[in-house]
Image 1 (cartoon, rainbow, N blue to C red):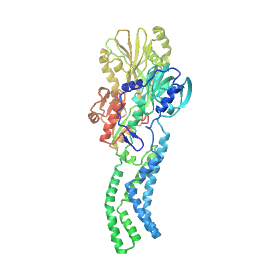
Image 2: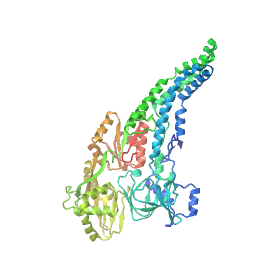
Image 3: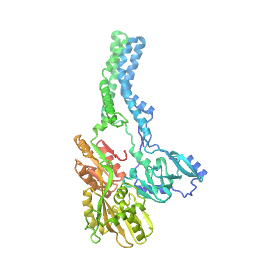
Image 4: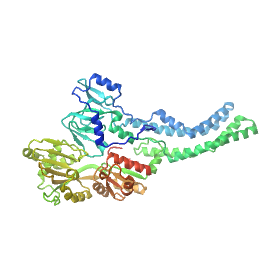
Length: 583
């Protein structure tokens, strides 16, 4: 571990979620509905098993001042100013020779003001807010701050709350959780008893009591934050170059100072005047005007960016922004406008799975109602569910026919980023809704349907498969539901702007790579439409090769996203931007 300027740099590897789930379960304890007792509470407080994270702390005002004050440039000028003050003590008129310190003070004011301003604003913009949460302790419900939660606490989660810990659901009738922050998955996920939940994710529907298993810096979100919020030392080439130049000049001027001083002193024997003349000669060797010009340019650029609601933590970030030559983007909410709609339903032929009728609703009302029923039974509440509800809501009365036909369901299978589908199981049949590649995995039906799926993906459709499985029979495709994402109206203009500025763009998404390619084409993506499916690559993928040959990446996991950006950062100045989540 290496200490950064405003936080801690972490070299810990990000594990996959399945491994992390085992870690969470290993910290779970058998609890009663009464929660922790007094002895357990005292024990965890003594061991500091508290939900307090150090990952989001910004620099203190003192550290900002020290970082800007103690530089080679300032040190050299302060030493020369001290010589002027010593001479002025004998003859006050020499004080005017210290006017060069105005440049030093002006530089200090610019740097310190900008960083403190950014710090105060960032302190107000915490990703994990600190609400009051309800916990069960000693059989009583208490209201505490989320930072006071203890490991194995029993806390209540309600719709609209951000989950503050990694834990296991203790009791619920069903909740919907948006895990996009961690997994990149656009779809919210239904959760039931004994399912895993993660810190930083959002409960979008339902209520639950969960056991806090990993808290504070031990949570998965804290690990991601520690890896993402690495604050490096100064990397402005202009400042590094100036500091190197000034360091060289300082090494040269030190012996020169004594030579010049001795020469002038033995000429006039007036040491105050000699001290002032020598300091003046040395000041002329320091490129103070260049330093001032650099800081003024940074300050003006920061001011202009501020007028466009862009906050710079450091003024030197202007140079880094200007030197960026690769920009990595997410798809949803960045290229697309985040509004989804249903374009129609295609019926699959029961025999070949390839003869598909045209889109439209005639004769397909029952299947539309079935899709709606599956989503409602699993309490799915996300963009896809909203689009299907808007399109098929008028067929809701037909759900009663399905209920009468099928009876009471036996099991609900909630959507997850691993399965990519949701389902409802009855004694005689199971109905599925989700990604065809996962529902039909390792079945003959998938190979028959694959050409049509690729064709639809190339047309920028997001495709959901509605399928059924009767007892021991194979899964049978019933229909394909086609959804479309709207393209942001300014996407093409922005892409062309980056191309004109010689900035390459990489799109990194969790969706199907063919869909990403099609949406990029609709947005007039001005770079090569080369797409790669990262779900087919393991942990040891040759990212250098992938980066050289592809601009579009689909089915990307958080660890793969970090690996791509890390490799790009090693080669060039790279920034990743996700408009939807403000990352």
